[in-house]
Image (cartoon, rainbow, N blue to C red; front, side):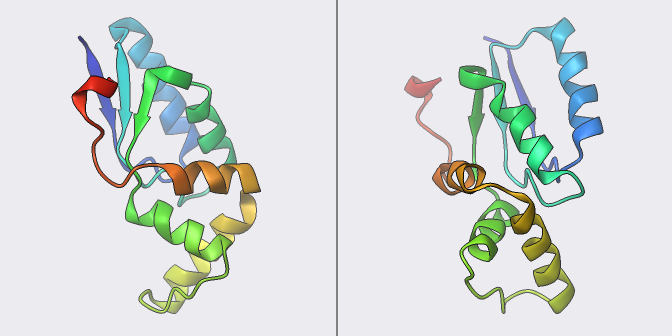
Length: 116
């Protein structure tokens, strides 16, 4: 089984697309997305691109994903700097409710091998 692992995408859709294009040659059976997906310049489109991978992708929620969900829900981000909190709030404001739901349902740790 071929597995590709992508981490820290940070809302960088052009870079994500470049990597996914390269993976067409490798043809992995599974693409593992290791968190911190949306905190960057193109959060909504980046998340939508990953969702298009369907059952081929598995996810673990990163701290940035968790903080965006917290910001979306109006929870305090007092553990962050003011600038960091503002950034996460901006990202949260770009997302739809269904995208927020997707992020909040991502597991926080690896799923058992049987799920691969």
